[in-house]
Image (tube, rainbow, N blue to C red; front, top):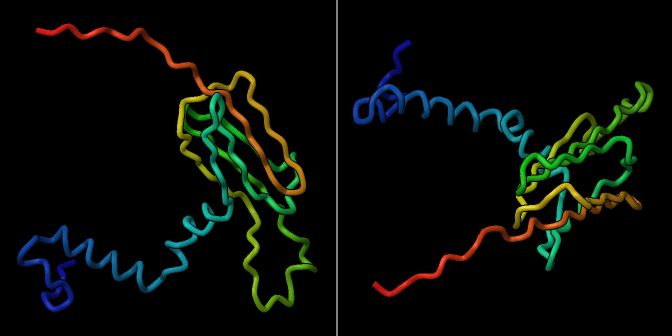
Length: 150
């Protein structure tokens, strides 16, 4: 399908690829809820990350969540994934809402850590809806090589 020149002012200058991007942009603006949901879902797990002397602490707010509904995985030496499953309310509790912003289903948050960590000695606690994960930093490795003057 060919774009009309008036619908895509970039076609002549930049080619048909730019017209596709232009069209997709307008589709996204016309339906913001669809493309914003992954952003909203990721923001559904707010975190604080602290870089301490020999460990990294990640604290996440998970109100109303039980420990059996949370999975924590170290997916790399500098990356942690927190996955939460919130159960759907029973059918009789789904009716009568004027606004419903509290999400149910599965949400995940990938947290980039400020230092490389190891799973050894890692701890996680969930108290009053606050998840605290503590991860030991990987000791600095390698040997420093001195530089000689030329």
